[in-house]
Length: 260
Image 1 (cartoon, rainbow, N blue to C red):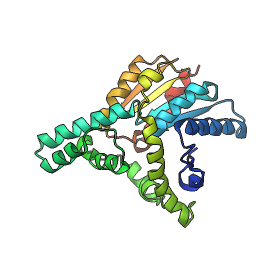
Image 2: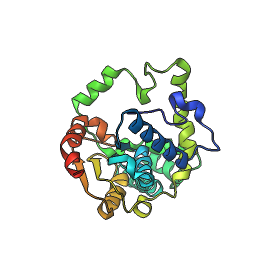
Image 3: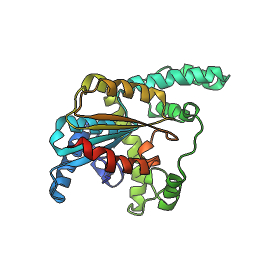
């Protein structure tokens, strides 16, 4: 199940800056999970959190563990501010090492995070490729993307009316601007040291170490009924989608024994 979160796509009209908070997003996640259990007559569901959704997923499981069989994290985020500062430092090092004076100057002018403007974050994000290194996702992933026809961020999805296609992009900017500043104090290494469900983390070998290192620190110290970390070759931040076959295998073969 995927859904347009409050403030995105078809749910864009639900964006209210006064109430657009991580707490509300967690509440929405729990409400959806509860609806799914009722709709399909199940006691629990499985929760996959990717990128920002991985923070959201952990927070939801902390509040309502009784709704979830297990948690699967992809591109796991743990401490946004620490991650952003690590990535900034890695970019400075990379730019200096390759003699990219223009980027060095730009980064020096911006200074380290946090930033007030979403466009400063966009500048950092636009250079992620310098840190990821070259890799080719699986052919099946590329074929699925081409066959879907949904375009970047799903903006061309057939379920969207013209104005909703615009709202997909508006929602990205507006939601980031509203929510990201409120995540600066989040650190799962401090805030989520124990979970009551099995945990499975997928990490791509081309993921930024600014994300992977804090995630590994959190995972190693985490107290959970069971936990397992997967290093996936030929994958970046969106590892669960790039390697959907491996995700499928994990869900069928590795997760069920952890629930017994």
